[in-house]
Length: 510
Image (cartoon, rainbow, N blue to C red; front, side, top):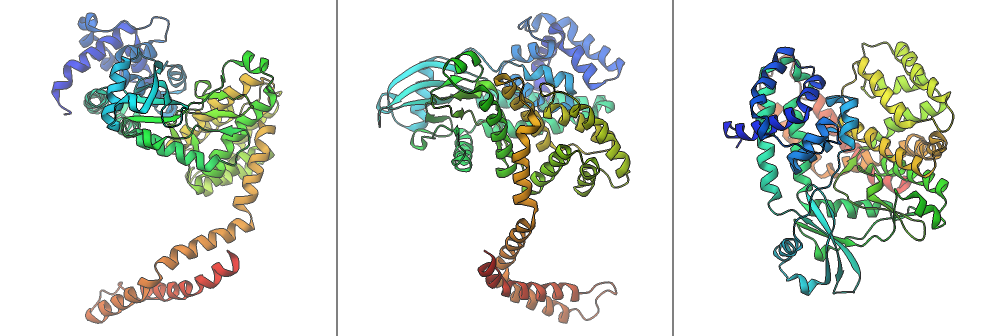
């Protein structure tokens, strides 16, 4: 319930924000009016004793969110992907938010597994360890499946997490509505919209069947990728609150010394992790949205193993083509073409000057190309690019924000393996291949075939639609002067002709 009963919860939140120094930082990021800051801080100051202290080694906002618990930690993670909302400095602080909490008891986890799967744990697993990882929403146990004796990872949602999250989300909505009413200048941050985005993401993460489906789809897309592996989903041991995958054995990607000692080629790993991500984003339009060191392992055979599929990014085919052309234009230093792509895609308003925009892009790209290999950063380029497009009135696109954020993380992983990695050299073959396959003549033919197939599905309905239009025309003795059914009939006839040739077209071209 999004009502005044949330006031006490918000008082505790405000007290914690004030006690940790986070309230001041948030007000500055929101550019809230000074009088509003005085009022808010004056209201919560007497209640500081209700606030949580948190970890004093963390930045103020990160410290406060970690102290307030799972929903706030997850909210901080979501905000870390929205520098357009909270600013780049605060978004950077939130990225280091530790997604770790004290685990709940193993016996409770077993009870949750039994309740979800309907079978006692000892009939499913011969061994079931204490938690090996605990996060804001769930924790993971290592277990041995009785069915085949293999080791698996069992992810279990925290007991009561759905109810706890819903209470906090209700409080978030209440706070957002208050801010929206009291501070018109803060409306540019779209507080209610941010909470809606957060709620949608959290609800999907609270159903592990959806994460299992993401893992399965990701595995299907990448099964042909050399040097990349994903743990297999055990559907018979998974449900809404429990997810079981094969155990991923390997060295954590952050332990570079151990990886090198095992004989793996760090330069090759650096190149591969970047190219894999670009392939997933461009080729498949479905990429791992949280590809940091903690979610990657290096197997004994050198494969890069990814896991934890709670955050996945999706790009439609049109967006992928636009993104690829932008990257390719920068690689070739063709800034006029990069500018034209932005206008063609509608990212920049048509009333802006394309030549002026191209010059602004040149000011972004040329300094980066003047750097040595260790300084070249695609993530930095994307960051600068968003700053420039914002000045030219580009509307925020959430899917590109997640792509930028993930690119920053992946580039960091790549440079951990080899700080000398030339990001552009690694990206060029992937982008060139995608451009060739998706924008050339063959791609145009493929698009035509896809369009024909869509129209073919409506083929059986075209005669009925044409008949209905003709009957309506004959029953309307005096249609308005500007009203004409002939264009619609013309489209129906043209559609019928096109649909009749679809089978031949597909037979010849497909």
